[in-house]
Length: 249
Image 1 (cartoon, rainbow, N blue to C red):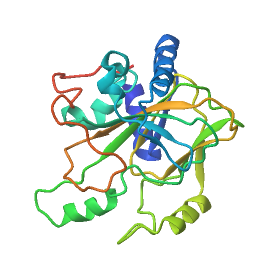
Image 2: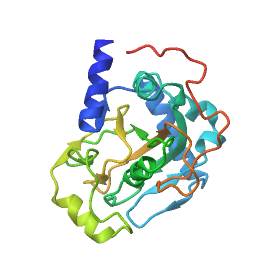
Image 3: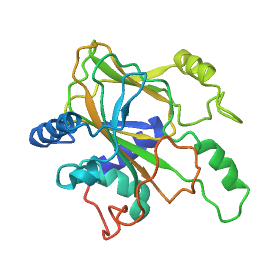
Image 4: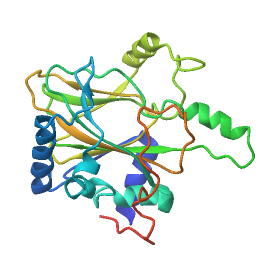
């Protein structure tokens, strides 16, 4: 329990937590192979201008392969301790970066600070919160790839978001801040608060890179909330609804 408390304290303090060896080598190889199989089948939703190919349907197409990542034992104690039975899978997305890739600076939950203000205006409203778990399937070594965060970026509202986002100014501001850089390896997971600004990148254009992202939220968000992904169906989206406790690793 003490080790879990340390992880929770770190997540709240830093906004981000690296879980080394979250997946076994067998799990890592199996899911990695199926992600590239999905590309071969043409199941991707698109490839954007920064080099990110995304897949939104894999959990529905192959639940036996991708379902075990939802509330995976490596992250379940953290999610359950933070959110309890209210922990809801919001979205599930896999990515491949087939060529050059430099993600724009962004927040998954852009609307966090605005919803915090809105909640203060209504007596029964609470601020919705969200946690991202990203599982990696290749080694992101220095010189190959990384994941970068604004240091303490979850503790105060960034500029240039409201009343309307100014993308260019926001990106410049993010680039000027102090950063925390992670180099997750194959089988690692990164857990972070979804409103912290971050940026993924490949430093080696020829590197093979893919991951799976699960977004969790503490309560259903109303339609139109400012988030990077659309929610999955409500039914069956609460991984811990039958559980009283989740054992800490």
